[in-house]
Amino acid sequence: MPIMLMDRQKWKAPAIPPGVDVRMCKAEDFRELSAVTAAAFADADELKFEEPKADYREAIRSGRWIACLGYGDGQLGGGGVGVGDDCIREAAGIGVIPRLRRRGLGSAITSAIVQSHFDRGGRIVWLTPGDDRAFRVYAGLGFVEAAQQVCLMGPTQQ
Image (cartoon, rainbow, N blue to C red; front, side):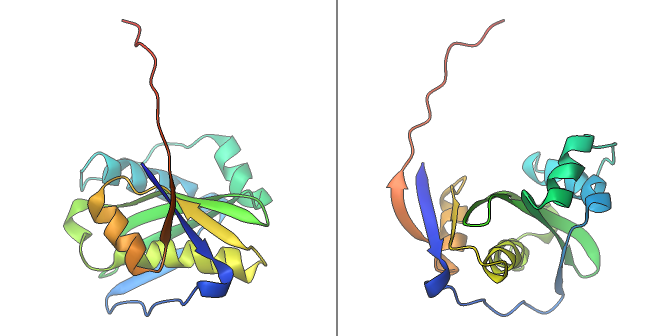
């Protein structure tokens, strides 16, 4: 799995496409973030709102997480987080529900996380794309492949 990097010195924020809106999450928005990313990764359009874990809210409150919600044509359609510290963050869990994909929402969410980290004085954002399509999206934003990550899985218990 590739590891891709973005350095603050090389970052150029892209324009947000028409019909796309992105906003940074507050701790009280985590219910929406949890529902939309769960749907996106399940390849579902239906959002199921459940009460999230309190420690996730604290991660946003404390600044350990930078979280973002994305909207397409006024509808909640995606989200993601930046996990780390003041210097280096991983952009993670970036997902868009199927009916709103291929409109620039994933790029806009990623860009908002990157920009927020750099606005806070951060130096590097890294991520691991889940597939070739995601790799192309991130490369289009200027992320460059820096290394390969090997994932090992142990035996599963039945």
